Image (cartoon, rainbow, N blue to C red; front, side, top):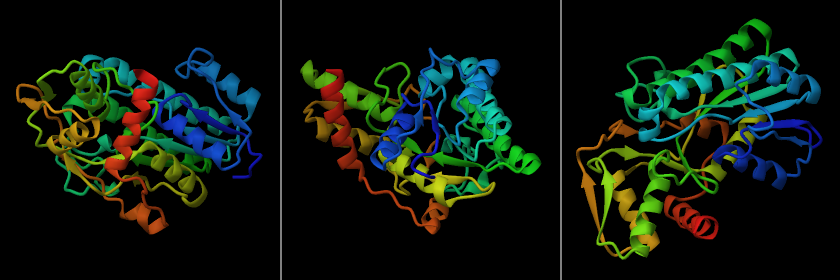
Length: 309
């Protein structure tokens, strides 16, 4: 991308979008386009088309989405599938209509089957049933991948798709009803420390394993893929390393400096038992993550203390 290119970051206030903006600005890109959800409802086809017609972005990072953890996905399934389908369809269609040079669609590794072989290769997409607790969100993200492929096939566009694994970082959502596991743990353990509580309750058995990647690494990978990747093949973005929820909770406990005990509520759902992405395709392109998990969690906890407490 030329440094003067008009670049639209959809979802610039979100976890991924804000990291992409930080990376773009650090790399010297200044012609960046933003709209808040109040200024532009991406679910509104006419409004999105008018924005693209007026602003004519050359590159698009599609990081806008309705996201959340198990609680939010279970509670608002219709919102998750409707909002994400509409956002993706409107942005991708307008990118085609108004001549966007290249678009990167960011999905999630929850698109893969619940019992996919581990580590999860990109070709496992659509080979088995999804995890029921986030099926509406996953189906919407799969539709986004197929949209990009279909426009490429029919219209010769350059729309690529990347699937980050579990993200964390600055600007994360720490709301206990709608957040993902890592920010929820940080908040719960911190609040227990402040209250001198003797225990912290963690959902599930603690046995599921998850992979985490710092959002600044995802932003770096996103710019890398925009520059280096073409075609219909999706690309996993991850660390290729996994940790059990129990060990993750212990790591957070150590970083926060909490001296109480962890209690695992086995009546709560675990979700997918294991979800480790195969990142060999991304490695073969020449990119690897840089931020280790403990280093990353410590930096996020410092951000949380500064911004939220």
